[in-house]
Image (cartoon, rainbow, N blue to C red):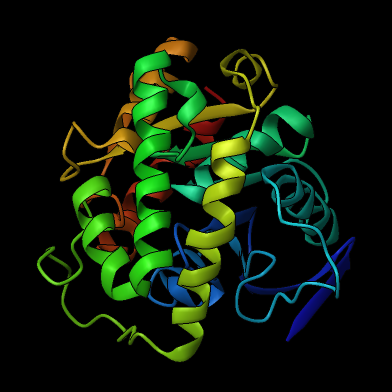
Length: 276
């Protein structure tokens, strides 16, 4: 087990494979183990780094640590990559991870060479009306969780974010991800604390442009276009003047379709594309 002390927390991280360093930053409550099916499919081409965000699973917060912010998450990634990489790294960030990656690119120039930002949960990318709607839906999920726990929050997540684990298609033979006590606690931290960090983040859209990092906005093939994180990816692509790439599955396609996702990431992050 690898542990990295950082201000206010201790980060748990895992490293597998060889080649250019590729950090996978998960969505939602996902910790390093959430990518159990994806990592081995990438480890033949990359040194794959996964981690638990501060406050999740084995990445423990220090006593009396202040509420986590998106800047904290970005600083954690910068410190983690300084520990494992000799130069600019690759990063694939999904939803929350995509928003963190954009924060890293803006806050820590030179840390990331290429970032795949898949449906980042970043309301500030949207016009005023869409931004207000996105923040309102996150707040509605928080209220549902506060009132009725996960039993109330999950239907709200399904309704607002287009995620329905009980009915979404997946590849065969995936590692089971039961709703353990640890996952439930992670969901609680994600909804109760990290949603607030997202809603209060002040990253301006202009800060995502000309960072020195090649940013590849990505959308899910099966994500409904009305979902706000999908629209965030489209807004990011428009800001950057590029077309978004389409990755397999929906909002959580990297965990539902790890084989197809690995093939897509290898193609996107191949040297001829990275240097283009």
